[in-house]
Amino acid sequence: MSRNRKRTGLALDGILLVDKPQEWTSHDVVNFVKGRYRLAKVGHGGTLDPMATGLLVLLLGKGTKASQSVMEGAKVYEGTLTLGVTTDSQDADGAPVETRPVPADLTRETVENVLQKFIGDIEQIPPMVSALKKDGVPLYKLARKGETVEREARSLTIHSLEITDFDPPRIGLRTRCSKGTYVRTLAHDIGAELGCGAHLSALRRTASGPFDVESAVTVDALRDMPLEEMQALLLPPTLPPLQPGA
Image 1 (cartoon, rainbow, N blue to C red):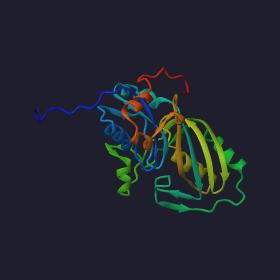
Image 2 (image 1 turned 135 degrees about the vertical axis):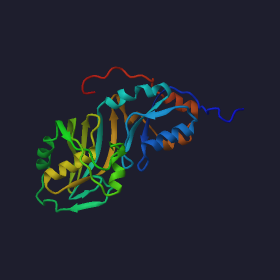
Image 3 (image 1 turned 90 degrees about the vertical axis):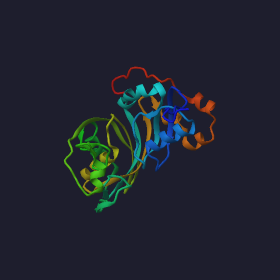
Image 4 (image 1 turned 120 degrees about the horizontal axis):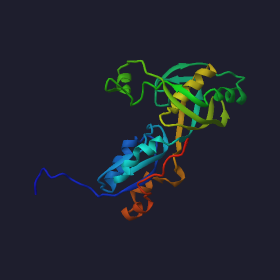
């Protein structure tokens, strides 16, 4: 047998919904599923930060052709905003940058009024700690060197933004937003608007396009799940045309 023969894995086509655990990267999940079942081709339809949990859409075989359609769909996130502290990554994984007092008289109504300013079509400046590239170099690599470069604002849409829990300095939020939205930047910007600063201390993606985390399988379940049982969870590798705002 030739040593140069390319290794191939099992060719499976479909979409697998996985509930990503905290501290795993999206790539970690892809590699785990690919190695666990010795699959030929696995991708995903939109990353989640290591801090985040929730819905990760894995694309197997011909399912990878649906990548663009999956990423185009609106996303739903539930998160926790912690007031009074800003970080260099805009979330709990970063180092504190500044601490300010949270107004003692802060009311739910005040926060709701601020949230209204972020609903609709808005401009957002991506964070330095991100995978976006500047002259071919990921921004997070520049950030590690202490460098900050100018980033162009990106247009996006916040379809809805609501309070789910109000217990300052922590505020629970749920948002439905377009692709490309950095929820941690949204948290940072809300904190700036409130005047006390804030960072995102928890995040969970509950939906992506037509898919819901309630239908997702956990990584722990997959560890002991036979191939045939996993195959039964696969959705068709194609998606229906996206509806406006879907």
